[in-house]
Length: 257
Image 1 (cartoon, rainbow, N blue to C red):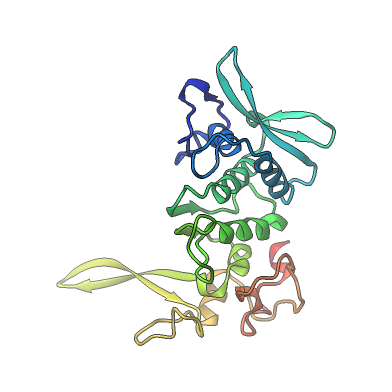
Image 2: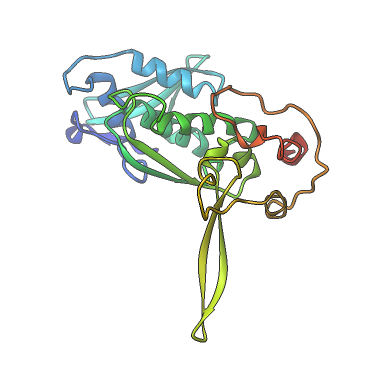
């Protein structure tokens, strides 16, 4: 994510790699080419990136790609409110990951399955809602028509963070538990999958639901948590885990201090 991209490798087909390579070239492509690969510079790309990143870092003023003709390099940089340019190599891990996800959100040519391990890493706890909101934006919205602005994309994350769990839509939460089985004197482990009750995942025959007690035990919580209307960030049509009546007393502010 921190590395500049070689200009001679830049094309209108640049995309973000699995390790974050190609970040600068991808942003440069989004700025210079439309979704039909026509050369049409679009300053709104930089504006949208800066606006989204400002949800994580309030003093971000501008994002751009520096094109160095002499060294033949493309370098992503952020300009803060003091007009100080900050190249990608000087940014934090959390900032770069958030920026990469924002680029994925804008790059509608990217589709398929996107997997991310522990998105809360490198992020201040109070910025977790912004990450979850961004991940929801990246994924295909089944309530809207499929098209260029709503590509077929699925996002899977894994986490051990109660804060992340509290922020995801209740329909999205999947609990995976390894259990040991014995068959023909052989011991092996099987992954059992369950979801929250009263969601589409459990409104089927033979479906398994997570018990409230199991969630409490997993996060080492007690049921006498604080009762408050916390973590207000952005209202969506989907119900989040923290908004469920049977769990609203569990995921509360004291948990994340």
